[in-house]
Length: 411
Image (cartoon, rainbow, N blue to C red; front, top):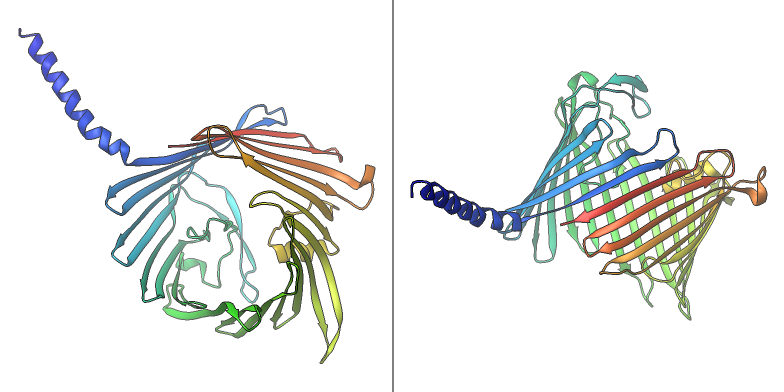
């Protein structure tokens, strides 16, 4: 009987623990995304990327998150976040850390700063950045306040998932070791105003303001977008876009951007037939007190057959200008100037969608038909919450063949 009591107590304890743990687990969600580099070999199979994201509901409408990034040396990045609501007030925020990177990076500064570049050795573990955003929507008007804080020399904006950490530091003395950016965002459709103020530990000062008018209607179905940007130094740029419907599903979108130094022009004829066809020309307006001509940097033809099925053809007459306009620094390699890209998608088994992207790149001469390389990216759902990914690349210029296999597990 004495032996039975401890076992009974253990059983009761396990039941109580399960009663507490099951609801807790039910509030836990997340994803595990990883990729293994198979080729080139050597070095053989290696961990290319691994990201574990966890989200836990701590109260009604409130959630905390954790994003852990792993590499071949272990934990390489760690971020925490929180989001929730108080009635019409929405709050989000986060903090980012460098767990172990002690490498040397090159920090760049804007024109007019001294020095223009600087070599900096990172320290770890260390704080990188933090951000906070509060949004309030009342009677169709949105007011948001956003605060970003960075430690030198980190400049990744954690509120922008597409941003790249390029170690570009503003004109702040490095010895201040931090940079703060405040933004006041007011939205009253179709108008948006964003005013930003910065602090290099020397006091808050005006930085820039952006005024946007989106989707405003003129007449006869014609819509236009206008964006004006000013800095504390004065005028930055003016962008004007107009969407002109013609007939039979054909329309033209023309965009002109004026800066202090140049004017750029983009024209996109569109056709909504079997899909949506879009022809875009990238160029500049040549001006000497009057329009003297146009400089064409390149052009792109894209046909969208569905939300993720398309064919795209891009030719760059000026590769550097095209990469600058598209904000893709490594779009082309060596003497490449053109690509053909095909995207396909469709229903997969067990739910989800399969995706396939094939891109073929070309150079003017030196290889058969000018072909340089081909890249293939495939994503196939095997279960409702499990997706297998494959990335393959082969070149005709002597570069190594690459192959990566990965997965995305959600729970």
